[in-house]
Length: 584
Image (cartoon, rainbow, N blue to C red):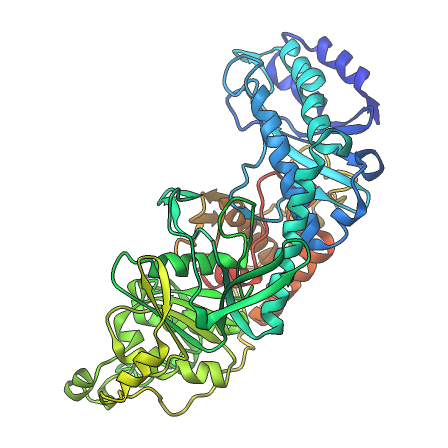
């Protein structure tokens, strides 16, 4: 490995040369107690900035082993270090001047959720932190002095003040790790006490705006109804009190603008841990929960939707149903079955984003359109069996039909953002009205051996990008197995990505918290197409292969030798959702 002094000499020798000469700097350079690795050098100052990472051996970093021994603590520590480095880098961003992206220093901007990201990885040997640097230039001529300031003055300060235990605020890191331990303990308590979700008293559920996930100031803090209040002891916070949502069918009702959808939104994001100050730190939902909605126009491939849709006029087989342009009701039926295939334990549904004819059919409509002429069995008539026979709970926001009152185990009314348990009162009223049909015969779950075949599944190696290395602690795989070119991927924010010009639309996969999860799904799908999908494995088997590789090898499993900054780990359920929406 070359020394930092050799880097300085090489850098000064190329001053005022043409910009592509910067590519000679790719590789690893020893900087005292850390290693600087230049993975990929941008082609010109206006192109995407250069990819760089630093490696800090654990013994040099000095962090207590208890902070990274358990996966949830390690993720919290990685998240905290990423935020520290991002704040440090912001102070030096663009201090080196020049054309294009000259002087840029940036890494992942973490949101309110605590996610496992490629920006920072704590491995068995050390810490890897990935970021981007805009190599300075005047026009397209190298500004060696500007890059020297970045690499020898700015960057060492950023690294020292964020990746070395002796230089950071130990109490803040400890608080982040302790919060992660408390959140993990709370999720374990959900399993132990057969709960679908928990919302702590004092939680702040409303968000600042439709484009900001920050907590809303001066909002009404959450207070549990007395009948649903539970107390739990957490390792660090101690006793916590809040609303325990039991497994079964829970209905959330109330007038418009009283907080029904706000509560459901908090529950759907309760599958993730949140940072201190978010307001939802102690909002926890079954980690396998899936938000369902209608997705008109989506593709469906070989899905058994016969539990909900049968006897189509065109005689199409709904036990292996395919379409490139699903209706709202068909897409939601497929969503339920895909959720079951993905082993979801809870379905979260908002009536506002559901297909009305899929959810319920009132008595009058059933009199006008006879049962034999309606191929759809509404969700109302399957929800009870989904819980009792498949073990899947439902939390449903309803506002237009009282039919769901008859099947609900718990009924919450949101009144000025405060939940009120009205179960007993509503059940008494149910006796005064004619009970609608709430149960359909013939409940039978399909097998989950649906084979996953694609138009063409290449047999190339794990995806790799040009330049540099993966890092001693971040993955060693080199080269392309079989010499195949890899499928090209491009992401479009949180909502979609393309792979070989085939767009995967994830707009309605609402539990994706970050665009970096979408980017990771692009890599995961590419890996699946090149390595795991052979037409012989079922969808479940393919997802398990991918998941096992991620667990065993980390990001290198799907990204190859060069792991980019800008990936965040999705859940298994989002991997299922991605594969199901790939039209290829």
